[in-house]
Image 1: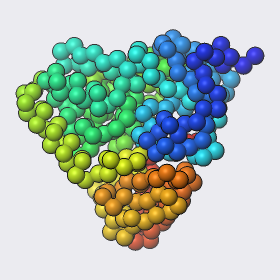
Image 2: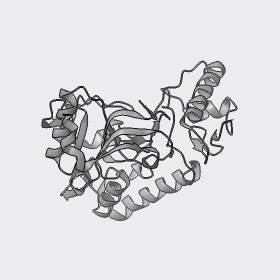
Image 3: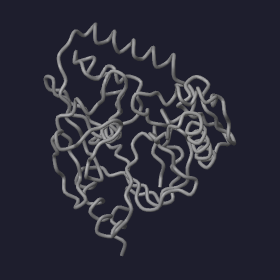
Image 4: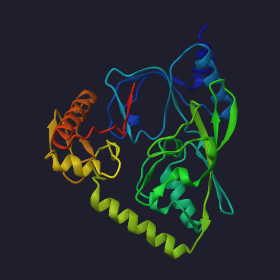
Length: 293
């Protein structure tokens, strides 16, 4: 008997992942599982570990490209109320991994807390933002983390303090397959001033990024001291198309997809951009978007 059989009521087999990603692309998950509680989540992780079943965690799908062939093993979605709860006590904020980063930002700003307002406009969930240390010009989420709660490979729920996580640019060193929640330490501030900064950040994002188009956020990490978007633009790649996807003519570090785009098209365009930037600038661009599998 497959140990996953006991989770049949929260499992969908061969479920297309395209509707769950911002690019609206990709093949099916062998098993798409949505645990209802932390304990149920821990059991699923333990089952996968003991039976060598591949495990993937799907957040908001905002910086994810799923290959057309789909994903074998288990894809987890943490969408129940328990995983999206946000609580604020003084200057300490605890948010479930499934909570949208935008929701957490708005909640903290409304509470007169400063520290997250310059993350406005960054898509995704808290869990994904923690793992990828989401950030912008105003700073990174990792700098606000006090601790995170995870499920270990053994299926045990543990709390990890920030100094053991190892945050770095658009990355973290979390040695656990699933983040359950994060506790953030913010500061009190002037509510009007915080709101003003949030609006300024949001206006700048809307003016400089193709937020109304179908994309997956920034495709490449910024090389140290450089802008990936500027390098791509200087290589003459704005508007470049492969199949039915293209490099945005608003911000060159975004790839826009249209109705008949395939994941294979996006991967070909990514390869073309990397090759042209390497030839033009001698710089090897590193992916920020995640590619499954």
